[in-house]
View (tube, rainbow, N blue to C red):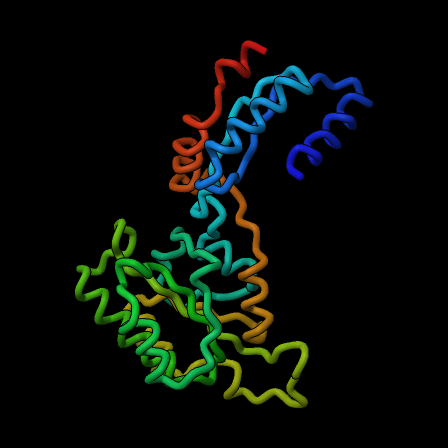
Length: 245
């Protein structure tokens, strides 16, 4: 299938008079890299007479958006935890929380090691004061345990997204002010503890969908991701052969 897709592109290039100098395969499953390198390299040489210049394994970190990107995508407002804006959060660690407080705490903080599950993103409705309070308590506990650091290789920096709206499939007939903002003392607690709490006008399901479907953009200002991309791609692409072509 992969070669068929390449062949379609080669035919379009040929129609426009574009010469193919080589092929780089991107986002290959890490466990398939050597197999792909051997098979595709041989096919390209035999059928096209061009080299396989690189096989780049997928690196999930490069597709993780920063909290600042998610704040913009959700048309949101980060109430606190602004130091976490440049941190990256993965879609695979984003969860819609609808359970009770005890189950939430057990699943999010007792059954998983903070150093292994470093940056969860909890999505819930702004009226779930119990979940917000539980999250803030755990945030304060973990910040104390790790000296307030959030950007170390094993530091926990979970964030919470609070939805103020109703999902499109089940809209409110009438909006109530109490349903659109967290309790004042909880907002102050978030600010006092510098916990990353993001408010969005979207409903919980819509907010989660936006997060899950978001495509992270590379930016020169995101030096961590740029450095990671350079370090990841450089050894997996034969730039010398590319430049000689």
